[in-house]
Amino acid sequence: MIPATPPATRASFAQKCLLPSSPLLAAQLKPPPFSRLNPKFGSLNSRRPLSLRLAKAEGGPSPSVRSDEPVFVGQEDVPLEGVIQFEKPDSTSKLKKWAHVALLAGGDVLFLLLFAAIGRLGHGFPVFSVETLRTADPFIAGWFLSAYFLGGYGEDGRGMNGLTQGVIAAAKSWAVGIPLGVLIRSATSGHIPPLPFIVVSMGSTAVLLIGWRGLLCALLSKDESKKSDVYRRGNPFELFELLTSLVRRW
Image 1 (cartoon, rainbow, N blue to C red):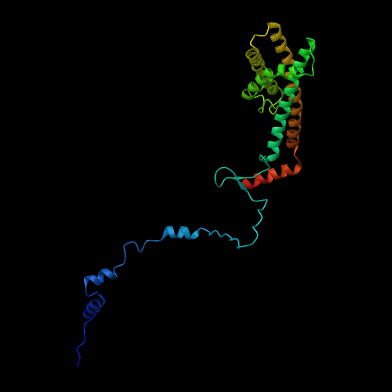
Image 2: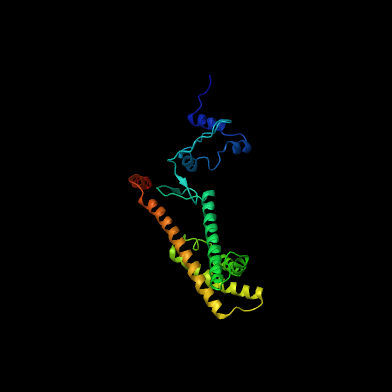
């Protein structure tokens, strides 16, 4: 006959069987201290949508850029939307710039030769002669030196910034270039020209050079104003694009 085991004895026996037999085994079965914490950071990262990108197949044609995609200008992630147009410098604009410079330089030389021809004609000398070119050489050299350093062939001198700036650039080049030409003539000829010659040279070159430059700058400034008026007029579709871009930004 097997004696009955009390309930307390059975519970203690079950606890002994379930308890680990060594401290090493107890350390292995002990859960890590941070295992019960909720993975908040992991859940936040898992909520973010994954961004997928399509890879271009090798040998295939490059996909065309959509016209309605925003263009990023300047800092990263700063989209630029609207109806703004950018003028990119190209070979045509550079060619136009050098054409204006060549036109100005050719006109300057022509009017300085005219000044020398008028002077020689007034003294009874032949006009169509090599001496006419020699008379104009010092003034041509002085004019080009002053115009190069004083902006006579820059944006102001080409009339890009208006008629007033073009006339001012021409006047500065004349005020320095013609006296410099007189000095070059004195150095090459070995004597100082008389005062009436200097006064007549300053007055006639002022009328010819500044007058010619002012006329050309007036024509060029009118051309630029017409182009700006075309850009300012726009059309109704540009207003619609502007409104839609503002709505998209909100």
